[in-house]
Length: 113
Image (tube, rainbow, N blue to C red; front, side, top):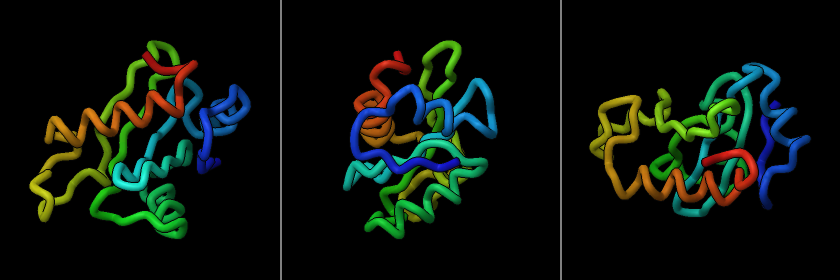
């Protein structure tokens, strides 16, 4: 299940978002508009929801949250954006990566380190 968050995630949101991966949730964020979607099997599915809600694919990045360690990861196929200089699944540009992590922590305050 993909959940579009407008406020910090509840325990129920986390439980619903972790249906596909019991100890992990995918995180997809438009870092310009601070739109965040969690859950789903593929980041591309969450990207579609963000686009339908005013997101811009140039600013949509993906990662995940390890629910056991609380670590936020910045690795996703949607991160391959050669036009933006990111030729890897890892979010390479430090400022963009830090913005992604900061937004993720805002919405996942009780679950992320």
